[in-house]
Amino acid sequence: MSTDKNRATAAAILPLVGGPDNITSIAHCMTRLRISLRDRTLVQDEALKALPAVLGVVEDDTYQIVLGPGTVARVTPEFEALVERGHRAAPPTITADDLAAQGAALKEAQKTRNATPFKLFLRRIADIFVPLIPALIGCGIIAGLNGVLTNLGWLPAVVPALAATASGFMSLIAVFVGYNTAKEFGGTPVLGGAVAAIIVFPGITKIEAFGQQLSPGQGGVLGALAAAVLAVHVEKWCRRWVPEALDVLVTPTLTVLISGLVTIFGLMFLAGEASAAIGTFADRLLATGGAFAGLVLGGLFLPLVMLGLHQALIPIHTTLIEQSGYTVLLPILAMAGAGQVGAALAVYYRLPRNRSLRTTIKSALPAGFLGVGEPLIYGVSLPLGRPFVTACVGGAAGGAFVGLFNQLGVAFGSTAIGPSGWALFPLLDGKSSMGATLAIYAGGLVVGYLVGFVATYFFGFTRQMLTDLNTGPEPTPDTLADPPKEPVLT
Image 1 (tube, rainbow, N blue to C red):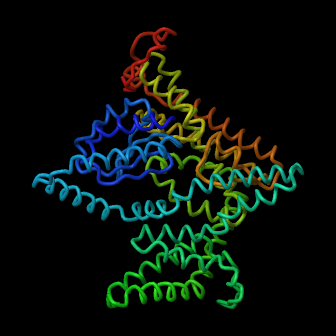
Image 2 (image 1 turned 120 degrees about the vertical axis):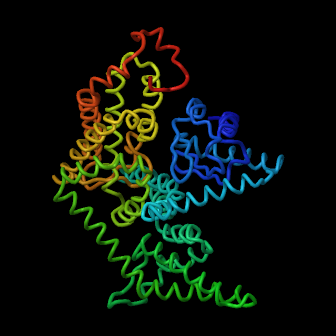
Image 3 (image 1 turned 90 degrees about the horizontal axis):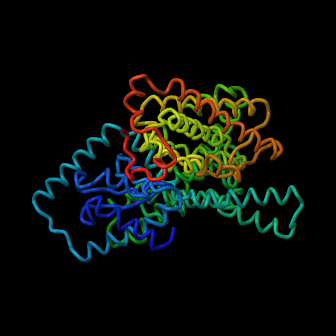
């Protein structure tokens, strides 16, 4: 999408969410533009959904507009610029009604936070890792390319350079996690990064804790996260008790010193044990549970995506990648997207007269094949109800297929997190041959597509649903060539 189109998309979205004065914060993740609103009633949901670039909307702790991977990263800066320009051009006038509305919104937000603390905590942890995903993807693909060249014996002079390029970020990922953790929890980001850097410092090998010699990277991202959280608490304590005249010298010194010593003589060992336990559990789960473990993981992943909680798995994926070079869980979880695609195809063929729904499916399927499930979830299966359940059945079948072969000895995973569906092929790696790895992953996708399709075709609709939804003229090439713009269930 060109810059002009990105700007046009941002300009089209802004008035439909209430204009610049209605925006209090802007952020984005892999697929969604996330905005906080002063007045939710000003948002024109149906008009937003009708925009060509908008794949769907989700209302959670923020208002989320699904634009898709790549697009959202380009539209967000243009949207931020338009909002900033609007604020400069016409500063908002704060009225008593505005303050009352803001107070009511804050009260409701606080009520929600108190009602679901665990859910919000998981989202906070996810927010630490989401900014790291682009680097994980890029380095993962480079690592895969390097592995292919190494196996084929091609370009031996380039292989070491690719290895360094792919491994540099992963060797220092603890520093980035520490930086983002301190930022997320209200501390000074660079102090969080400084404490986390201790974990990857080569000189740590000269130190002994709990009767063991420490090693660089011990504890990994979990240790970095814990160290940075501790640093935030120490820093806040210092801000309360250290005189202002000495704050600039004493606070950072005490923060790094106290947090660093606790990290060296406690957190690195404990986090290392936790990381090792995660890796052992994942390996044993698939080596012994195989098909059943895959069935459960593949079947439950779509509900996690629906709730936005799938990002809480990022620390686990990252820990597994640190330990073995790939995460064995992601290819299994990716089967949920295959079940979703199969279910959407069944809906398409079961409702030949519902032009608007078929148009929505046709526009969302390419993203679905590439592992972006939100458009099909929120535009098709979830509003229909039963097809969402049958899509989970398809994901469970695909997960069971991949899990079974893992139990039989063909263990593999993804060298990075983020992509799914067909987009995951370049990131696959494992202990077996690349041909076997690719074939089993492809087989899992096919099983997910087929079971999701069959389950939805035969069990995804009641007779009343078919009567209510399958309305309109018989489809012909002429009627399908010019569909209505707005995808509304008829």
